[in-house]
Amino acid sequence: MAATRSAGRTAKERAVGEAQDDAARMNDPQHQRARCLSDIEQFYSNVKEVKRTAENAHILDLATQYCEDTKWFLEKKDYVTAFGAINYAHGLIDAYRKAKGEK
Figure 1: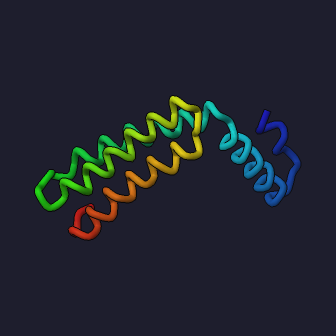
Figure 2: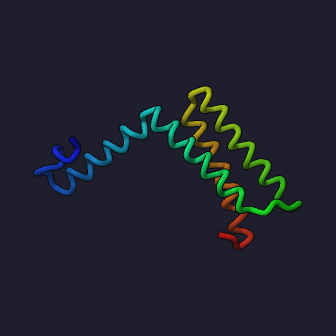
Figure 3: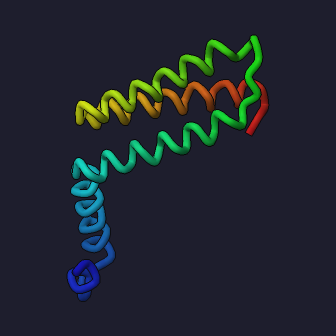
């Protein structure tokens, strides 16, 4: 259907249509839930790469708690807050890794 709609449209019209499709997808609860679940998996993959030390234990614990909060918000179908929580968890890990010169 998307290919049919894009036939004969200008690049600007196609871009607007794609943006509208993206907005509709982002507002779809199933998409929001799937995105959060994917981000949870990615979080656990990333956190495994960080060696736990006395120095970073508190940060890792906080990040993991935010990830756990994400699961709770998903159960409540509060996808916006869940997405915020998992992004905060990722941000804590990313900030620590960057401060330590890690990838």
